[in-house]
Image (cartoon, rainbow over all chains, first blue to last red; front, side):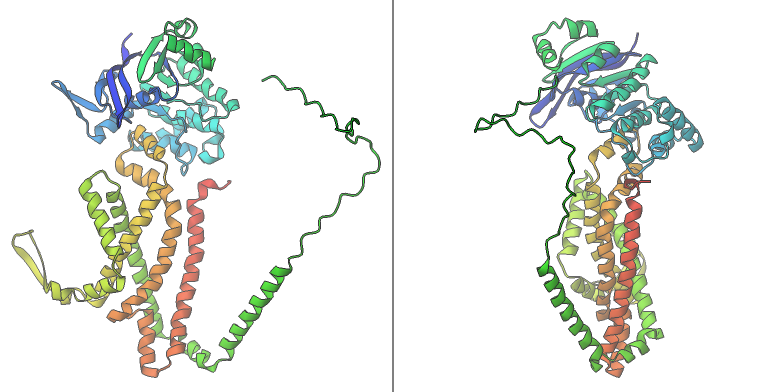
Length: 253
Length: 304
């Protein structure tokens, strides 16, 4: 199968601290990649570089065969104008740890905002699609509510519906359940599992080992800005080859 | 986590068994009534303040010099109402134009462009660090600096030339002077509001492909309004009263209108009272209005 995401020798520093130290990674179309690793390992930063929320210092990332945030000419990469970056972003859905729903808009308006203003869809069409998405994440009756009146789990499901509204080719999840009360984690993971079953290409940064085991096609273990080990969950989680992976798993399992 | 066993009661030092919790169903005594603390000091303080207030009211009502009859006579005369009208629309225009310019300044100040940033900073610094009265007098005398104003190509030929004094009457000068001053403060209020919005909101909007203007207008500004409205309300009230400063350049606002009357009749105090009462009345109306505007922008927080 073809690669949806190709990450090649990506480096990124914040000040003098190098967060990503040469990352190579491939995500195949229709597969779920789960990225594990201790805090500060650079996994969230890596995810953010995939839709250009974070710029890379060197290396390149392609999504569906196209460079993210840059245009190539010779051996140089030229940064794209914001308009171009925004257009490519509509093909990549991003789900944040803290949801980042728009608190002053209703659930329905949160979902229809991007299709209407970024994709220029007719309002009626966007509204109908939003209702269908809410149905899919089990929140059909919450269309008129404001985010502040929903539980964390419900908010995250709305955020997933909002990302899906652009019909992205790729979905990125940045610790989607880390800000949730334990009893609300399941409902969000169920929605993500459902998407996985339908063949959505996803990269999920998470601490949920059980989820990784159940859903991931590939598990990637990162530490200190490098990919330490990657492979099918049965290999990486049950028979890790690297000492650092073993040490991490023994702490979280 | 396994349930922890309840801690065993510590043996009492005398060796007796600790008293068992009372489980018997004997006649329970009525629950004790709570008697609040006597607040003697508060009562005394209130009494003293009320007494002082009564003395003050008495002195105002009994003092003939206030001439309440004259106040009533002039309260709704056409001259006073015209002055009030001018004060009101001058306030409204200064407020609207000041906030439009202030928003642009705030956005410039927060942009990545170093030139825009510094110019905005310099503008705010300049207009906040000189008294508005001085600025107003400067604008009033602008003809001395630039006797003629022209329209044309920069450093090139001019198509249209006007004498500054003819173009800028006192009212225009008042409007320009107050607006430029207002904008400097409005910029800081708007900037504070924009900063109060979580950075994640912008990132979420970016990740959804929303353009720069759309992000500002649809996502960030509406949320910033909750932090902008209370200080903007203060500014509106301040501006309403602050417009009285234009009386020094002979603009016939509320204050200047009553001054015109008392220069003729020498009834200074009652006519100042007319102005005072009108200012207080309008401020009260604005305060009530502000309450409703705040409620509107806080609507998503309220229970539905």
